[in-house]
Length: 217
Length: 217
Image (cartoon, rainbow over all chains, first blue to last red; front, side, top):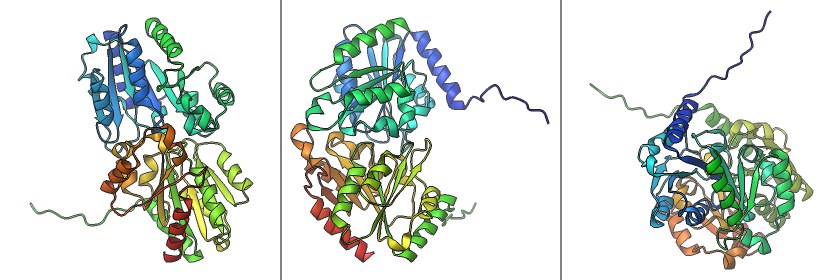
């Protein structure tokens, strides 16, 4: 019996729409970042802290993904940024089709950087491409330093990892060096920034990396 | 045109297996709790703190669910409790089939209370029955008090909610009363226990409730 090798992965509808989103973003010169994290890691605070530091150099917009409510989009709009809220109605991650619909509601020609806040979840968002240029995960000190062992897929598949809530380090046992070593074992090329969105610690280095990446890609 | 009402939901294979798990647990006199929370909310610490306080009155065992690793089962075994680790290999929640396989590895006739630690995720575990008698969610102070707005399904569908890491309240803005009001708006009958597994605060009230529920059901 001879074997016929399958050399091409059949592309799902979501993957096709993700490529279409990416082509549209490229055409309009928008750099998109898929921001993924567990619930409460500080995604919205991180987006606001980043926006505050780059808004004189980049024009920003935000897509907010949640099961329900517009709590996050309200916060982002209050900071003067254009925001579109996607309610997934129970679904555990954003998908490319939802993001494509949100892109149609944004003035893309007036945007340089689009931050897409995914549903709070360390598992499902990792496997769905949205059309983004940069995949970013946020961990936080209170979650504990063992998370890369337990959720390896997301740590292995992002370009940059933010370790947030460094201001809580005096109150919680967390070995930052061991955490970083474990992450680099899964993903040697990952960029890693320990920060606190409350005190501002570490955000300058992250913003410098971001500005270089947006210009380069 | 006349309408034919659909009065029966077609039962999925998972639901059938969940019922089978439940029947087996009932037959052997085991009370099972499905412990659900976001990553890093303190599920394993809560299980260990609970075990420490009830092990002279109840015989315990633990099923640990994770995408990968045996970090949690190792901790539980080190505390002298029988534990079975399920690695979901990327799946975002435990299912009744996996739990059924784990039950077959446990000496059920020697167990009164089975704590099932689900995958860290505030979304997907909420919709999969495992055969449990009690559904428990853990929130924690660092996650923020807006989570019930954003993940309403899990808060609406558990019997008991633990608010963990109360020892961090001095360092993090969190309105416990507002949080509790929002949760009760979604789920008026929910039992609610603010605790700290580090200091032991609040655990006595939770344990009293637990012992009454295990005896009653």
